[in-house]
Image 1 (spheres, rainbow, N blue to C red):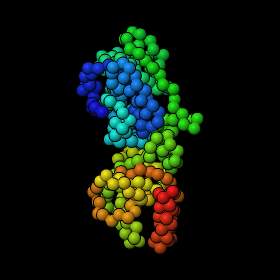
Image 2: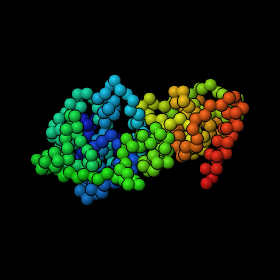
Image 3: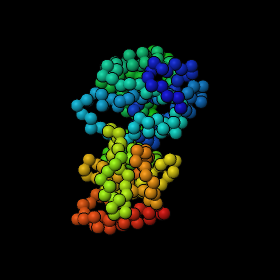
Image 4: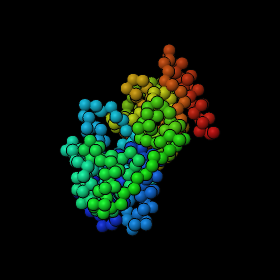
Length: 302
């Protein structure tokens, strides 16, 4: 996958088969669109192109409200899009000035003049331009003026529910890992650097790696989870706790004893095991952790 960090970098010499969106999570609906783009590209002698934006438009349009947490960091999104088979990714800086681009100017100046638009594929609820004023009806009309083809994809359903990034974010926030993984088509993951914690786990034979993650990354509901831990290309299993206080993330990796401070771990969430609990003392905590470990290991083997 070729990556361009602005529209100015993109100089296509092929038929561009384009879609537009934030593609947070790169869920099953997004993958369907990418596959559809690639099929069209084969027939049209072109390549698939996604125009996305960074930062997320809501973080720019509502600077006083930074509550929106995203399924993927930018690096995670790049990895998922490449794995999904996308051929070209344009990550254009989203600014308050760019947000004022009128819908007709967006199509004419950006899609047609800068991207040499040949074929445009949009989702069922796609709007574009200033205040999201542009509609699929407008695209149909403009396609005749500027000589491109436009195609609208219906919502992709799972269990008869239309899948969206918003719904998946809500599921993750509720700790519904089973359903969110189902909608994503893979396990929800996060990456973080191992930092020093209070080292309480060491005193009860359950050492944990405390993770620092990007500020706009969504964190699941507090509680204990069975997770996969990817470290130096190794896939290990462990149990992860998300605490009430500042949603602190700490993971105990099974059968592992290396010093990994400062190292980066990737965590994939497999199953939510229980709610967060308070314990009267360290012995009570240790007893519960032993139960948690047994339950997690059973799920690994099942």
